[in-house]
Length: 405
Length: 150
Image (cartoon, rainbow over all chains, first blue to last red):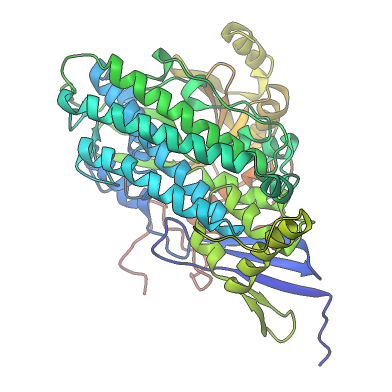
């Protein structure tokens, strides 16, 4: 049997049930260059849309908050906005501010988490350790407000379930100042690093045209120059009343995506700080009666992009159809545009740059085309990615490796 | 473009539409028959430059509905193209993936769960159903019986 060495298949995945998504990437490689990519998903399909049809309107927020461990505030919020639109419910002012605060804290910890993991993939473990260390206080704040570090379960149709105790506001503001200082240090260290610039600039480029055709959202779109953000374009919660700006970049490479996320961290801190200071007094929920027949759409800006919910009701107490679209559903297929022509050692960070499921990239394996022999596994691919950074460091005249003093 | 101009532009393809519904200030529904859906979608995506979001497949009482959700971000408005597929025995519609590659997955998903055929789709494989899932069983259809599967 003749084995063609020219064309091999690189399998990434398929799944890891601990993470929010399961995916299987099959890369066709010619030598070290990726020539095609095929994505398979739904290894652990939970049928949330179907389960939702069997639940009552007020139970569904708890269901959809379990779609994703990290976006457990933006999914219920998007759903609730759809139901509120359907029933014509206007949530009280205080509830809108509490929703804003929780959603921004969610973005904050998600972006910090991404910075850490991205650092890990290219061999910057110090960034990984620091980012995860400074993510902890954000989770502590969320725990103080909602009682949970994740899966907050704090929003309901017509308002919020838990109020923010005015006594802890000063404490949270103090903690935010600390986080901002530390993130400022990390951001400067990362963005000014010549090796990181050399390693990430021009890698995994998604052009503006491709970003529109693949309908990507969130930081992935904003890094490619597509100026969209649900928080500004269709203001919900209290975003329309606060002062902040949408961060965009034009290059569309991994570095641009990193810049967008890092700078968004500061915008998030700004939003939380303003919302806490302006927090209006009053009730946090209104009474909800019947949900009428009809259809409605709710969307919210999750850390990874737009979360979209469509709800149709026939006037009963359960929806007849509930459609959910998470941001990765449109961001992941864009690999077809950003990975083809790339080097294998750049694939891990390109996949990680849209912030999909990390476990997938941890479970990489290169398989030969004809006899399906494993050529290299995930650890090897991670090593390839990291050794490329190391080589660049050496070429730039840095000493080998780095040590903690 | 202002809201009025947007409505005017939509009126220019009114011969392809059954009617335009407005459920709330920022949500427009463009109702059309499945034969006209391709042209309406193309108009919304290429002429209005709306962003494709996702498509929803629904099993209504006497027809299938495919709702193509587009977001017109300049005005924060949703343009939803609602296509009715009247032929329940052989449901089919023209695929929009040839001009919106981002619609590939959502069309494959609707094909899986609702059994609607997307004509000219470049890569019609299973997306969310398992490889060994029996043919002709579509889990979101109203007549699908859960317990009988095994």
